Length: 322
Ligand SMILES: Cc1cc2nc3c(=O)[nH]c(=O)nc-3n(C[C@H](O)[C@H](O)[C@H](O)COP(=O)(O)OP(=O)(O)OC[C@H]3O[C@@H](n4cnc5c(N)ncnc54)[C@H](O)[C@@H]3O)c2cc1C
Image (cartoon, rainbow, N blue to C red; front, side):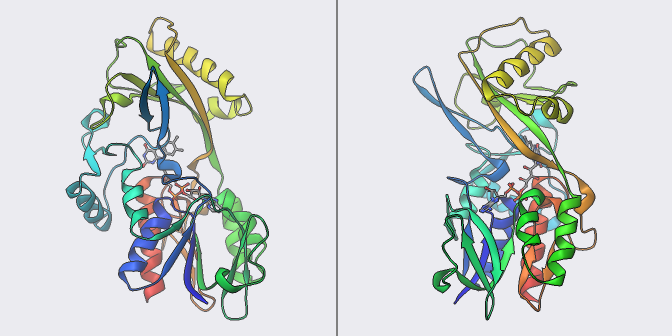
């Protein structure tokens, strides 16, 4: 039987994995994504023969918690994060792309990418992880002493509701009560410099940023544009091409930039972008059942930001140790 499994390699899951490893645990992490990021993802595109990266999820993060401040200081020392004053006096970004701290943490633990976990089940002495293709039910390499779920509430809920354990029913209800709002994100490259500051906050465009103005990015006029929760919910089922055109039109209208054909235009739909607070665990910021060796962490249990995800994952690892 293996030691401990974590499902989800976003900031929460990897903060938890990092701390558990420091505590001498043998950690195995599974993530359905093809590479490091979660909601701190970076999308690469070919634009006029060059590879360009866009931070299409998290734009920047702030630091209040002392433990998180220490982790960020370590990343800054390793040149994977840097301040970006254009977004605020205390705004930090990954360098050369937003997923840099995630990539760094993932490199130090055993992460299985492109591995979607369908369910977790109780086994004779611990937990069994069931993979998307149904494998794992025969035990062996998928049996763990302890297991941690580190995914958004909407994705945790079906896993929690299938577990036959009283505490899981309670946690599943909390996950159900925590709904996230969506966000359409547009990635656009323009042939000329737009007459705008590096960041813009509007109404239906809640945020737009000149991605190429962040430290360590490729030169050019590369923008990331986010639709508001209301706009994104209203246009949720558009295909990416339509959503990209519609959001670009709103951007031009709100910024008074003359309508212009971008050299590159792509859109990404984040169905679960911003966690609502209904599922928050105000006392702890995570869930842990020591008798069964089963826990849950994620921003939705702490605060809906990068820092909240780190605090949740790190706090859960401390609880596991005690
Ligand atoms: C558009 C957008 C803008 C944002 N802007 C900001 C910002 O400016 N500042 C800020 O602080 N925060 C921002 N946030 C919020 C921030 O991204 C999150 O609070 C934080 O990254 C959440 O981390 P997490 O580890 O809890 O979840 P995630 O990053 O979502 O990680 C969960 C991981 O679990 C994996 N997963 C899910 N289900 C399964 C499964 N069944 N099997 C295996 N793996 C699975 C996913 O692939 C993912 O990698 C933004 C988010 C979005 C989407």
